[in-house]
Image (cartoon, rainbow, N blue to C red):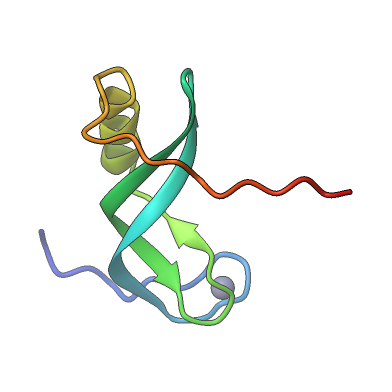
Length: 78
Ligand SMILES: [Zn+2]
C-alpha cells in the first residue's frame, strides 16, 4: 500500500494508527467475531475505521461457514 497522509480521527482529531483487531459485527447469522481484522484505530477515543475493502471482505466471510464457533459471554441486565 502507498504511503498515506497521516489520518486523523473524524470524531476527536486524535492520532489514528493501523492495528489488527478482533471485531464483533452483526451478520445475518447473528453477532460474529472477526479476528485479525486490519483496522485504523484512534488512540484517543478508540473509534475504529475500516476500509471499504475490509468491510466487503467481512461481509463476504459472513456468508461462509465460520472457521470456529465460540460461545460469547452473555449477561442479563436485571
Ligand atoms: Zn478519536
